[in-house]
Length: 185
Image (cartoon, helix red, strand yellow):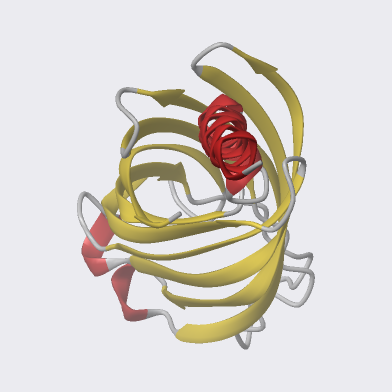
């Protein structure tokens, strides 16, 4: 009787260990839930001058479910502007993963936030509410690193709001390239 109980306990332990190792890491941690953070470099057409204004930025990406998440960005495009123009963004919003194939994923995003602009030639400056639809492609280099290519179209309905200038709104747009690191899995 004791010998049979020992065999039953031994077989149970082996089967439990096998079942635990049979589970994939992603299913064990709840899907794609992860927090990514990184940096990017952007080049935008400003819609208020002929320049492509450029600069660095910070990005984060929080996957809530395998398809839905939150993204945010802060960028400081202060290079290559005409006559001292700058363009700084602070945006946050939702994302939806439209497609995933092996190491690639394609996400749509819609961000809201503020944009601070210094117009060329000291004609004025302002801060504006912005909506920013866009899309990005991620390529997973390793388990912890990925690269991102991003397109964004910013809509500022109340800009530029400068005396003597028409206020028909501004729609800058541009591309960004960045690298992200998985901070929390």
